Length: 142
Image 1 (tube, one colour):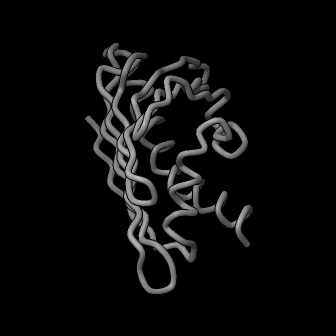
Image 2: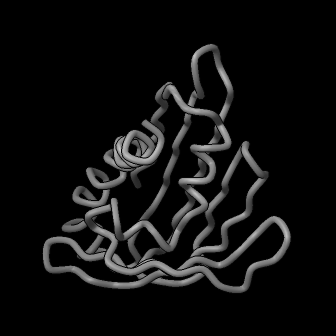
């Protein structure tokens, strides 16, 4: 199923971009398909996130276990939800003039019909993730 890898260089510090990705409860403010988000079961180096997504008549929630290295990396693994699998990773590397942000996601819906009908839509949404975080950084940091 879809494996998407994107990267972009942004004029912000690695810690600033990391902080945006870690601020899960604010996702509904800038990710149009995300209608609810919360974090719970926080421990050192990880937490559980629950997102409710809504697009094209589909609405569902899923949980992930998010492991992180402060300022450097966030790894997201599916815990429960409508996906057969969902793996996502963010990497933040300081470079001259800013940060190289790398985003990858690999997913497949449990239901074959959902995978066929929603897979392409979710692929497009996933491709917009990096842009959404760049825009959020501009709003907060410029």
